[in-house]
Length: 264
Image (cartoon, rainbow, N blue to C red; front, top):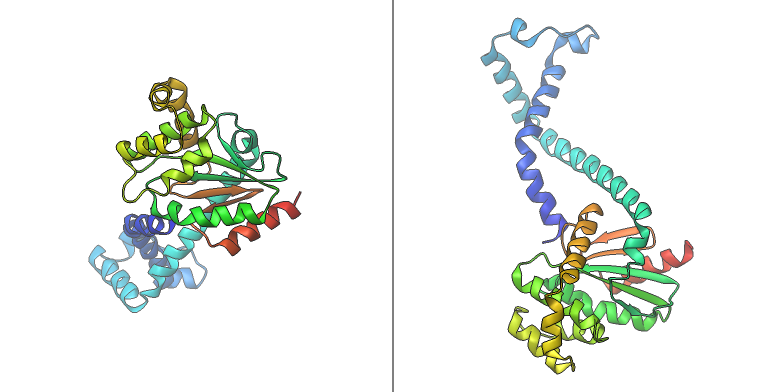
């Protein structure tokens, strides 16, 4: 799910509290004492409750735009606060983000710019990013790519993520990773194992490695890290000091890479 849709869902849940805020603002706007700079009277003492509610209702009906304005301002402040927190996490946990030994690396392992991707093999937006990522690597020989398995779309995704990390133990992570994105339909266990055999993995060893506790621990670590970075959907990217949530076109990705390189 994209962050944009999650934001709209969040606003739906926040509508009632926002209306209460608007109502409070409406009271101050219609209170003569407030407009004259004098201390406002207690609402319950100054007018009957039904009269207060009527006046607030009339104000909102006559000025419906204040509801959206309040919602937009709330969302802006919320996003700014979250971005600030995510930026702090990015600085404090840079080694875990960019240089974690449990995370497979593609592109140029010695590249001067690192692009980190959080993804789910059953995410259609992640699938759309596959050719974009491939092209970005071709155009940037100095691009280092860190893969963060982030299975959030159910058991099939978790199975595929475990298989991918197990494939890393056999030195075939990137081939397996790309193979999974060629699968038609849902990436389920049978298709995952089929891809493993196709790219030349030892399937029995793969299954045994998938059951090792370190595989699940690596996934759990990625999920916790994504949450700390406020990456709540897939795909999510970190490059330089920037966090980008959602799919993007090649031009946007190239810009992020150039900006990260220029900032070094």
